[in-house]
Structure formats: structure tokens, C-alpha cells
Image 1 (tube, rainbow, N blue to C red):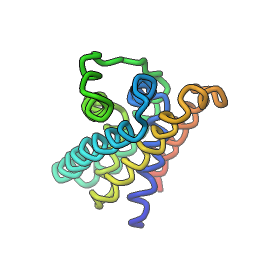
Image 2 (cartoon, one colour; image 1 turned 45 degrees about the vertical axis):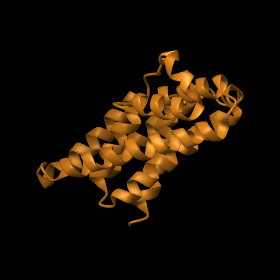
Image 3 (cartoon, helix red, strand yellow; image 1 turned 60 degrees about the vertical axis):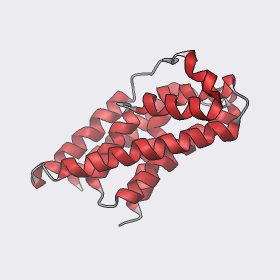
Image 4 (cartoon, one colour; image 1 turned 90 degrees about the horizontal axis):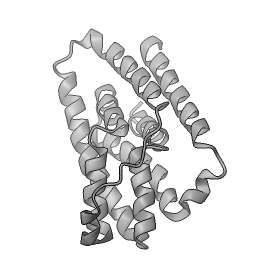
Amino acid sequence: MEIDAFIIPTAAVALAEIGDKTQLLTLVLAARFNAARSIILGILIATLVNHGLSVLLGQWLVDFIPEGWITWIVAGSFLAVGLWLLIPDKDDEESSRFYAYGPFLATLVLFFLAEIGDKTQVATVILAGQYESALLVTLGTTAGMMLANVPVIYLGRKAMDFVPLAYVRYAACALFLLMAIATAFL
């Protein structure tokens, strides 16, 4: 179904983002600047550009991979991302020189750079190989990123008091493992 090209990427990225370095960066930016709208807009634009390029890369790679291999590569990639989720990220706080540019530009640049090579970017490339609609995958992964990060801006550390981060990581890992099994065998 075409709607799956939006729903699955949204759920996958929202779960993969929990505890991720870009979510920690969001927390740092929210603590540094009292400008929720500017931070949200910076995250939105950085994610649309980063994930849009990632989707194009994923769809380009599919043209060069033999058709029989794609299912197994996608399933293996879901498995790898699921296991990767078990490794907690650390706050790699970027140079404070970007803070001088204000909340929007600092968020835009830092978030875009932090997302390069990140597990949510890898998941986006993988999902692009699974679905034909570049637009829906890009919008879905961006929606997932926003679902995971906007509450951090408003609620910050208090949200993590209710649910231990380790449990959320285990649940996200389980989802990716189920997606790997479903891709390979269904």
C-alpha cells in the first residue's frame, strides 16, 4: 500500500530517534535557546533536506542492486539498525561557535551535520530502497523526526523521568527486528 510508504518510515524514524545524538542535540539547543519555534523550524528544514537527499541516494542504489538481493539487504539493514539502537548515543555537543548565529541557524546547521551518517539517516536510505514514493518516505521520516524531537523541546528532561530510556531503546530494537523478519519472510 502506498500509505505504508509514509506510516512505516514515520514510526521507524520516531522510534530510532529516541535517545539518538540528534535528540540529545535538540535537548541542548532547547536548554541553550528559549526559542521553540526557531528550533522546530531549523530541525524541520534540516531534516527535509538531509532525508530528501538520503531518499534519493537509497532509490539510486536500488537501480544498481540485483532485484533478488534487495529484500535481503533491506531485511539485514533493519536488523543492523535494530541492533545499533541498543548502543546508547552520547551527547557530542558541537562547537559553541554555531550558537552565535542564533537559534534557527544554529539548529539548522548543527542538526543537519549531526544527522549525517546517523542511524535515522541510514534508516531513511534503507526505507527509500523499500518504497517507490520518494515524497512519502521523505515526509514520513521527517514526520518521525519531528514526533521524536518536538516534545523534547517543550518537555525536555522531564519526559524521560516517566520511561527509562533503556526500555524505549529495547522496544525500538524489537520493532526493527520485527520489520527485518517481515521484510525477509512475508
